[in-house]
Structure formats: structure tokens, C-alpha cells
Amino acid sequence: MNFYAIRAIYLFEMARTWRTLSQSIAAPVMSTALYFVVFGSAIGSRMGDIGGVSYGAFIIPGLVMLSLLSQSISNASFGIYMPKFSGTIYEVLSAPVSYLEVVIGYVGAATTKSLLLGLLTLLTATFFVDFHVEHPVWMIGFLLLTSITFSLFGFIIGIWADDFQKLQVIPLMVVTPLTFLGGTFYAIDMLPPIWQKITLFNPVVYLISGFRWSFYGVADVSVALSLGMIGLFLALCLGAVWWIFKTGYKLRN
Amino acid sequence: MLQCPLESNTAPKPLNWPESMPSNPIISVKNLNKRYAGGFQALKSVDLDIHEGEIFALLGPNGAGKTTLISIICGIANPSDGTVIADGHDILKDYRSARSKIGLVPQELTTDAFESVWATVTFSRGLFGKPPNPDYIEKILKDLSLWDKRDNKIMSLSGGMKRRLMIAKALSHEPKILFLDEPTAGVDVELRKDMWEMVRGLRENGVTIILTTHYIEEAEDMADRIGVIRQGELILVEEKNELMSQLGQKQLNIQLQVPLDTLPKSLEDESLSLEQEGNTLVYRYNSQTESSGIATLLRRLDEHGIEFKDLHSRESSLEDIFIELVKSST
Image 1 (cartoon, rainbow over the protein chains, first blue to last red):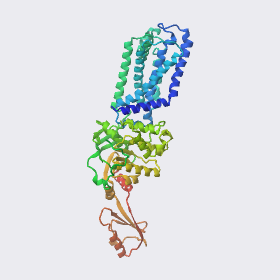
Image 2 (image 1 turned 180 degrees about the horizontal axis):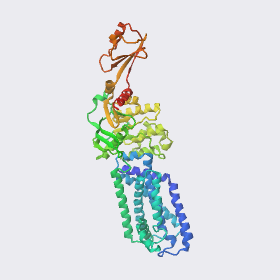
Image 3 (image 1 turned 30 degrees about the vertical axis):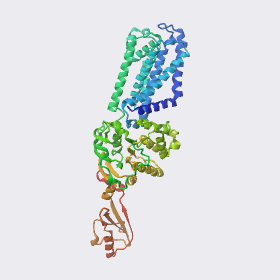
């Protein structure tokens, strides 16, 4: 194991994070605050409790997931896309590093950053609503697993993308709608019966449901199923990354 | 343990270096092919041995396959088939050991913009699996006149400084083999001189150097051996001096006092010709033969009463040879 290389990549990526810290923090804090003002206070005050949880508190796990998913994907995809775009990737390709080490370095840094921002979103929420966390260890576990999984997913997008447009298209056209329709703002049983079935094909439903369970002990689907689905998606992403490095897809021609 | 390539305390190589070269190659390329998906074959059965401690110049027109060959050896591109052994390690099966011995300065100035000089060189060393060594990095930056710029962001550097920074990055992990792909492209004369001085210094410390350049006079100056690649084929590998004397010709230009229409019958010879409307008599001879025949020629001119006002000789340069080679095999 080339630990010096993992450390070098990780520190390089974290340096990028610290350099862009103000914008990295400002954007998610701002958007979370806006969501709380609009949905938590303005609209939420007129809505009843869901499963014994006030609406303002109900949307917190979903909003944290929202920023976690978008941050994980954008950090990781940008992290590997930029060296490809600028050409500095030559150095990583010519270095004595295995694909596993490259992934640990890049994905580890992206995970760290999105984890920090997820916790920051949670901290922002405390200024707007009262809420409690019933299973804090599980909560951190879900945060961590989701960050890793979606940072891996972002890494794959970053390798696949040949231009900036492709870099944006998946987060914008796929992940955002899935997150909004994944139960951030409603419980699944509030949907018409047919949509209750269709929505189960949305992987984000399982993330938000499991994560919300760790807060309030209530869930749309069973916790085991949530964990299983995250595990499945993690395995799929690992498989894709393994294939990318094995074939040199878009990295070594 | 690797030698620190910039340290000058190791014994310099003897002057008659080419003859004393070891038979064990530090890089051995065997039957290397590179075909792209579109069907284009960038390399065709390339066989090449690079000797330890030499400066090897790879010459060829644009698109001949120089960079492809370098990219495969350094691990940036995958070969279609064939093997490459670097310092005893297969570059695919034992890529860790192979790549940790190799430093690469690519042709393009590809650097991060916002990193500092110090950070990027430190990053390179770590990436190649070496424990931090600030003293060594300080030494490289000083040797490359980048020490004053160590805290500057890379984007604030000039082109020449960026080029030196790329070299610093490539040297950061103390490689035994250094690839320089067009290191002097777009670099001013002064800096080019410094750069070649540094390359010589590296060689004296035992670093093997493989370079490509479009300035063929630089290859003529620097290289121990020359390889010429054309359309993916390595058409020639030869010691530079050998190449120059085998394929190089000498030419003596004799400026005549009175122009001649034709040569006297007894002087007619394929090595003699009249040029510049009979004002110049040109004598071509092989620089390898023991006697050039100049003395005999001058005596015979005298016998024929042909007087001359000036004479000068010139040797064909590597560039002449190179152009001839690439042309003749097209």
C-alpha cells in the first residue's frame, strides 16, 4: 500500500477544499436556511405533524441528505474531472499507485468535505427548529455511508464526463429530482397509492427514510431495507470503479 | 537506496563513456505495438534498449510516435502488445517498482493553477511513494532557481519557470530514469543552456535520460545515442558519433579564381562537381576514411593550372542526416 500517495492525494484535495472554503460553506448554509424559512416556518407552520414530528423537524433529515448528495457528487466529480481537463492527471497515471489508492485519496477527501457540510447543514437547522436525534451513532453511520457511496458515484461521473456539461447533467437532471421526490418534504403514505409503489424505485427514498429513522425512530420503509439499498448502491459503484481502472476507461487510452 | 540525482558527490562517468557502457539495459522495449480503436497504428514492433547512464535522444517528425512510446513506458497509455522492462521490472506486472524509478517531464505545461510551487513538488514526491524530505525538495528548487518562488501560486509563474517546475516535480522522487519530452520547446536560449547544463549534471550522477527534441543541434550536443522514429517504426538506433561519421559527409568548397565551364577530363570523378556557375568546385569525401584525399586533389589542381582564392570545409550536421533519413525512408 502506497500510503504516502494516498496522503498526498487526500491532502491535495483537502487543500482545494480549504481554498474554496467560504463558497463551499456559504452555498449549502444559505440554501438550507432558505428551505427552513420557506418550508419550515412559512408553510410548515400551517401543516400538521407527520408521524408525531413537527413539519419543520420532519424535513431536516431530507434537507441534510439533499446537501450531502449534491456535495458528495460535485466534490468527487470535480476532483477527478479537473486533472483530466487540465492534463495534470498524467502524474497520477505515471505514479506507482493502485486504483484503490487513487480512489481512497480522491473519494476520501470528497467524503470528508461532504460529511463536514452535512453536519454544518444540521447545525444550521438548530437555529430554525427544535429537533432531537434518537440514534446518533446510526445517524453518523448513515451520513458516512451515504457520503462514501455518492462520492464514489461522483468519482465515476467525473471520469465519464468529457466536458463541463456532462459533469453537470447527472446531478442536475437525475439526482436533484430523485432527492426532491425521495420524501424530503413528505412521508410516502401521503402520496396517492400508485405513486407509493412507483416511488419505491427511487433509491433516495431509502436513504432519507433510514436517515429520518435515526432522528425520530419513524421510517417509510424498514431500516434494514434502507441499509441494504445503500449497501447495494455502494457495491454497484465499487464495481464500476473497479471496471474503470481495470479497462483504463477514459483514463489510459 | 537510490542516489540523490542532484548530489554531485558521486564519481563522474569517464569521458569515453559510450565504450564503457554496461550491457544490461535499464529500459528494454520488446516488440511494442500500439493500435488505436480507429485502426491507427502508432507504434509498430518497436525494439529498443536504453543503457544505464546514457543520454538517449529520440528524434522523429511530428506524429511519429515519440510521445506514444514515452507514454507507454511511463504508464500513461496501455500497450496493445509487447513488453517493457524498466530497471528489471515489467511496467505492467510490476508497475509499482517500475514507475517509482521513472520521472517524466511531459511536453505540455500541465500544472495546477492555484497550488504553490512548494506544495506541488511535495505532492509529487508523496504520490511516488517517498516519505517527506523538505531538505531534498529545497535542494531541487534551488538547483532549478525556483527557491524564491516556492510560496508563489503556479499560475503566477512564467512559461520558463513552469517548465522548470515540471522538471522539479519529475525529480522529486529521486528517479533513476528521466524522460524529457521536448523540454526546451518555447524556452529561451539562456534557459535552454542552463537546462542542458542541469541534464548533464544529472547524467554525471548516474541518471539515465531519454529526451525528445525538435532542436536537432541540441541532440547533437547532448546525446550519447540517437534513435530515429518515423511513422511508428524505429528506423535507426546508433551511437551519435558513429552515426555522424557513417552517414555524415564532409564537403570541401574551393572558390576558383577563374570560373570553369567543365572539369578537365582527368579530374572527372563522382566526388567532384562544379557549382555556382563554375565558380566553386565542390569535393565530397567520407569523414571515416583515413586519408581525405585533399592533398592529392590540391596538387592535381595545381598541375592543371587551376587556381583558387579560398577554401572551406563543412561537415554535415545531425540535422542534415536526420532530414536525409526521414526523407529517404518515406
